[in-house]
Length: 210
Image 1 (cartoon, one colour):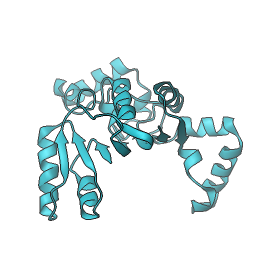
Image 2: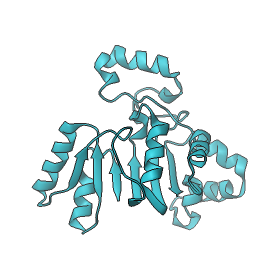
Image 3: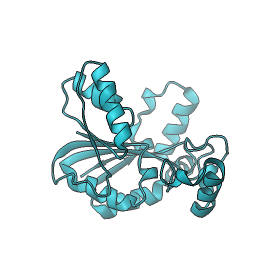
């Protein structure tokens, strides 16, 4: 398995602890080393390398599973990064992808502002630089805010054979809230309702099969 954007490294460490083969790819050498140190503190040596998904050689037909959780909003050339992940997956392999949702009421990138993600890219960049300084463009800016239709279309163009969104992935009987269970059941039966719900959901989530 491969995790893109390991952060502090808890996923590679848990994988190591459970005897799973998982490599972590982290763009920041400082974070990569901090993640390794975290693993050592837990008694393990996680497999973590420093590199950019846009340029790092991931190989071809290498991984059964690729995890990209809350990272692609920070990848400037994101289509190129997705092409590399598709190439790195074995036939039948799965990509777990989660990122920003452009029209969500609140964004994890800047939760203080409702509908922050709906700002045009240029305006969003200026706003964040005004608040955090010009270095935000190198250290943490969300270059992109995605939408379900854009991502689904891109995954299909790249060559993924199947793409399952959040509504398709969750079974109504697994949802505790009766209201959410009814909404989910309705969305599964009504494509227009599903589109509306996904438009404003907190994140874009897909599992894609090569």
